[in-house]
Image (cartoon, rainbow, N blue to C red; front, side, top):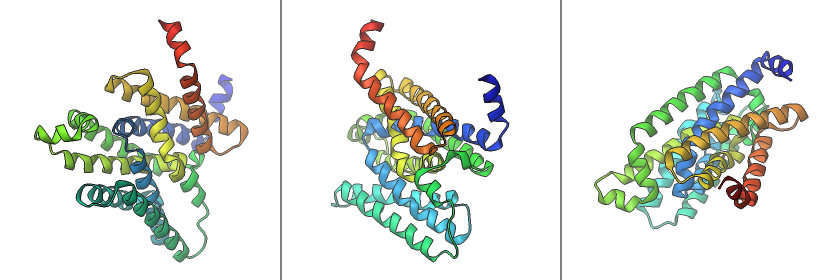
Length: 275
């Protein structure tokens, strides 16, 4: 088995896949915890799917589609946040509008692009085994940005997650922090899109954090466990997908889901054994 693992690591695409999985686990562990605690999962889904417009734009302009996601993701995050805070339009309606508009823009750009987009499915459903080294570098830079901003504003984000109104009363610029958090979600989507794709981003953002929340109520430990779970499930999913030649993104999510439901079912028995 050790020899097999060493043999696998000789391939550049497998090394890139494992590094990408670890980088993705950092982003989804940190931001996913805030997403779950603040209950903005569907805002995250709206940002993720609206970012599909950036993929279409990237193909149309002839640039790396991952880079094309950034302006659409940030614009969608700020747009959803602004409409939610400044207009009478319900939050779910705003999410639906951006969700549908982003996907439509992506389809139009792809239709206008000469030729055929051969790896489009990797952006919809992910294929971590095809991540190039350039994307690994982009993911590393984004992870550093995300971790640095969360470190700088940890207390403010923590207060915002549990009681936004009280945060504003205390003089903290809650609305600006909310917009910043949505932008961090957009950056996280960029990190995760090559791992599981636009369609499955929500799962990777929420399942590790939701599992860690069942285990601890301490926020720092929750983030730490989310990162650990994300890394274990992602690398495990890669191994299974490689062994059975099945889609990597879907396999990673399936592994996470199985562990989550298994823990939920046997949580009481596990607690009794440990007590």
